[in-house]
Image (cartoon, rainbow, N blue to C red; front, side, top):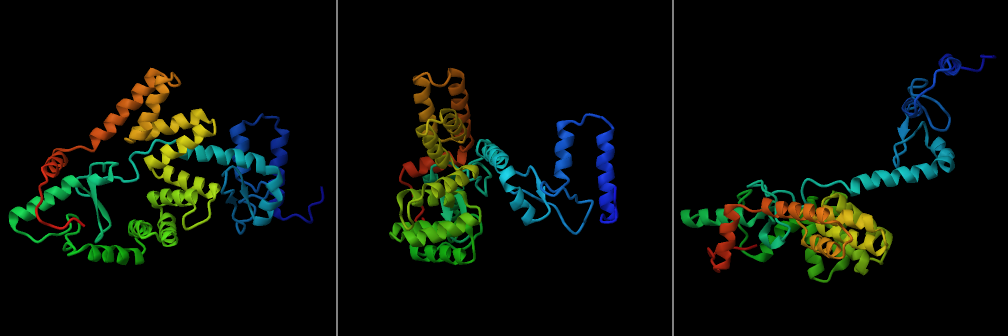
Length: 336
């Protein structure tokens, strides 16, 4: 075999392939896949052959690598079908993974899960922290008993004197790129019927990873407020919110899957959302159980998990704050 046109390293690579082919030792599927991951899927060049050309993964499926964009484009017709299939599988792995908590996370003071009912928490414009009513109540009671000035229970920033001052603080944090503040300002824009302004703020917050901003964007694309209706983008942001642990988004996606006759996928979404404490998803599962579409065991499991999620958001201090509010009590301090 003439070798004048080959570099030494290429010769060694060719010899290693020839040696492997002459050994008559069957290679496992895992070994073949591993070898494929070590070379360009189109031209066959390996990372060992030329360190200058770093192999890069196909960012959709991560099944193969390429040494250049040219090779990736050339290989696209052969790889497209397998790539789409694997990308869908990876997407489903993310979609149907049970989140450890909802998108709201934990109260930064008591470290207990925040309730899904936003009326049971308070957003602080000074630090963009969501505080549960239990910690809010404890802070207000401490200030009242000790004769202290009102302040944020988390960062201790003096309480705003008015709603206008609180909104100004949120806008200042939004200008600094705080995703929660951006989302809050977007919500204010909706209240003022400024849907284009809301879209811009939600988009910035979503780019920074805010799950609720993704959910709000899905609603805007669905209703056509501030942006043209577009189902593909609505679904994209809805799935992003689902992956971020948003129970309402997952319930909505489950309803869409059911409408599209993807019943198994819809039931999975309802079960996952119910385990996060979603009442709507639990109600949907109850209807499916009554119609004998899901088993008694599956519904009982979801019901227990739902109750566990709700119980995890309770504490003596939160219960005391609820009792205090039911009695129309107040400390005469701000509620911004």
